[in-house]
Amino acid sequence: MVAAEANKALSNTKQKLAFSSGNLSVNLLAQAFATYIVFYYVDELGVRPGLISLAMVIHGIFNAILNPLIGHLSDRTHSRWGRRYPYMLFGVAPLAAIFTMIWFPIGSGMSLFWYFLITVLVYDASFVVVVLNYSALFPEMFVTMEERTSVSSWRQVFGIIGMIIGVALPPLIYGKLGWGPMGLIFSAVALIFFLIMLRGSKEKPQQTQMSLGFIQAIRYTFANKAFITFVLGSFFVQVTFALLPAGIPFFSKYVLHEAESANSILLGAIFISAILLVYVWNKLTRRFGVRITIMTAVVFYGLALSTFAFVHTLTMATFTAIAVGAGLSGLLVLLDVMLSEVIDEDERTTGVRREGMYFGMNGFIVRWGVSLQAVIMGTILETSGYAAHQDIQPLAVESGIRLMLSLVPAGLLLFALLFFFLYPIRSTPQGSADLPPLNPGSKPQ
Image (tube, rainbow, N blue to C red; front, top):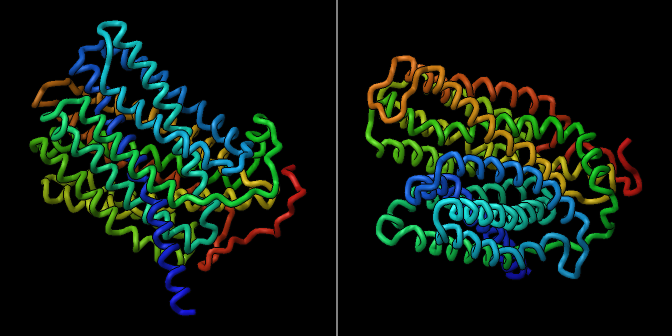
């Protein structure tokens, strides 16, 4: 009996690790694309910046709209493999293939622009199909708070490793082998971990079929107070996530007056700290519940970011980055756990599981956080008098960059804290939420 239980526990651990490893692929592809694709097509291939900017705007709008559409389609899917698994199974290979194609461009001039636009949109569609369904499977496979915090912690460890690979390794690879081979190598690595993830994915049979129409599903989603408070809090948090890596290079160069290697030191301190602290946030969540713990993480993260307002040396900035990574770690672990609670509550109201729509609408709303980050960053740099390619900038630029990494994100996090405070679900430390019994026949009013 003891041996059987030990084998079962080992099997469960292997499944959790296999499922979690998919996040390495997700963040590897996402970070490599976000960090280097514009640089490659503009600086290396010579496509006009305005055209690439236009393509990226189209890409952003397309991505935002596609998320709820794919999520709703997934919710309504009925097959012998389940709702989510078929999209993942048949989507990972095309996703790896189209990611490779992006780095092997064809044509020149306007034809190169059209190649970029088409491949990026196909890549975007493939990415949403795979990643949204992978995310939607998380709350279905793991139903207790203990399981969710544990798996979410492992997912973030794998995800941060993917971030590091996607951001740090490309210059080493394309500098020696070229951009195309870099894309091929990253695609192969991503495909391997996606296949491991598929081995660890197990979908439960659904007793009830999704019957809501698309507009009706959206209306019911936005009638959920728990989702509204969650997604608004998540939105403000995600804006700070976008500001942080975008602002670090400016901070290193124009505030600390350090070489480019300082970027790697600061980002490395954030990532390593985040990995090391996921276990701590896991334990805190099990003891205090999701809502209290995520509010604690917001406060810690905001206070850490605020210290960017006055640090003057790389050593001080590194300690600040370590503290930022510690707070960031808690938010990375808990956002999906909190959304999973929202989905559980929705099932009690509608009688069906709608992970796809919830993750899709979350993606739709959070996507605009990247746009807000670009507006904030552009406005601060423009109004402070920043000029590209100048080593010596006006004094207002230093103040503006400090503001961009400290008081501005701290202010955004105050809004996040407010919405998480208003979040109505009160989880117990054991993981059961304070919710009424499930009524499969009921629908939102």
